[in-house]
Image (cartoon, rainbow, N blue to C red; front, side):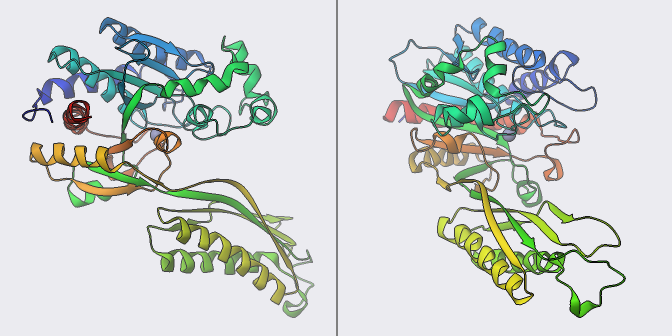
Length: 420
Ligand SMILES: [Zn+2]
């Protein structure tokens, strides 16, 4: 173990972190002047990577990008073990300054502190491509490519630009990348003996319990699916109540049942219907078809998957009782991810030594860390964001909390680097 707890000049780090965040909210780094809007293969995204590249090169890091554009910087030659830090610096289309970017900026600050304090830690900074899915509608795209959790056909044909409908593949080529080498992206993880991502919490638990730091020990898995109820569309005035097959009523029953199932499931399970579509969608027509989305998550794999199964069965039964049918289609799913005990313990020791109270928690939101945690011992650090707001220009996080996070991460990395 490294001897003694390192303390940093937190005010100085907070000032630098705040400055980087503000710089990256300037007009060269966002497509909108009302929000942060930044995604793959746009000039503002290129500028953002260039910002990190020049800061890191000044610290003696070698910088490069994987075959589709995930950004990597390292201070040791290939073949030598390095500890990974970072996050993502793309935003959603109406985003704030902190989601993702704060994690990369804090990782940059860790690299600065490593030099300034002469710690000599072997580090690799990673900024994953397209975490938010704003460019091609695919969340965690860069890290899923690294983890080989995509099909080539999807990259060539199915993942389409939200702007012009053309495939990811063409856009990557036009931006100067080599998507045909996408399988080599896995090399981003080479030599990593650990990984920590700092991120804003995106909920209000830390704020409301008065904590500045959350140590994340698991990331919820999820099921994204749709249920479609098929009934019969009739005239809303002319058709008596007992002559109807109103698909909307079954959808309503399902929404309430989902609330009941998720609440009963435990294990941090949550279930949400975020989209609902009635056809023909007219004020004077009984809905003949209802489609609604399911977003079901949790850290207990059996519990949240059970909810998905049960709501599908319930929909079928509820539709059948009214003489209708129900169909369930899965869009995307990801398993819950337990994070690494050693990395979590190192972070907990570091935060305890700092004297700052912390909260052990799981992440309900998906993060790139879940794409790599089965290959690299990983954990995450959460800092509060004001009122839990994220994915909005209203987003705010205190750079002082990120500076505290940097100190804790630095100490954890030190202990993991000398004990292993
Ligand atoms: Zn994020």
